[in-house]
Length: 399
Image (tube, rainbow, N blue to C red):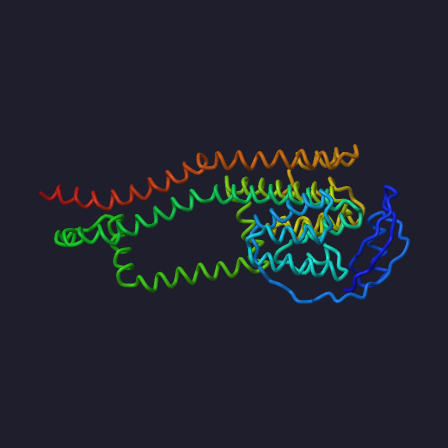
């Protein structure tokens, strides 16, 4: 799509001159009017903008530093191209240097920052690009960058907390499985000849472990291949739309874990909604972008339904209320914000509340999971103990 240079007056009466990407001049005028702008003129720019694409995977911390540095430099009054060149010199990621260089080149050729960023969907998500576009049109680019920086920082912190919460039970489970396999393959074999020499009926726990020993020793490769195939099949199925939806529904229905996953998604939703609303994007586009940004398939589906209700004229709170995945607290805060005209403040308050809830849950998750781990460990020890001592007691009774 070509770029168009425009002159328009924003809602504060300020004259804005910038560049916007669109199918034609009519499309650009429609975009400007949706943002509350009074259009004066729109002219197509004949640029030599390159069309090559980079499909690079850049770390979140790199994007975070880029956003903060660009905000600081623009706030200090530096031109956009000079700011990008300064950011390029400060980054240590060679791949990201190429991205910044390409963005800078496109802007020199007449492109807007949002259009240049939009060429890198693997690097800059929809919320980033669309927020920048609104900031350019409304003349609040520096403020928009600050809001995006806060969102990325909070989102990155929450991701780290989630990984931290899952690390402990994963390691403990792997340790238990490893100990069980070692016991079955290395300890049990030493007792099998003794048990067989007595020619007596072995207890069920002992027969189970001996059977597992023979299965591992004779069919170990097939078992490994079968388990690997099962894991791969589940993995690929989860990557399909229907599989991901079923997996996310399962996670939300689990005890303890489901409540935690729900809080994580509510925190992400409220923070997204607050950020997008602060940048000035209209409500329809806001929900469309949030739907793309949410990682949980259940919440993506629910946001699609909520968006349809809003388009039909329903209030935001009432639209959310018809879904069981949005908490009464969140709905009530949004309802108050809609009626009082303080939606931004309400969204900020509820996003902070759920951020603290996620942090507290992470801190307490170990104590919540410990009973489950203790029961699993106790069951394994009981099975091993019964498998070893029951036949010995039977042998003692024979003498």
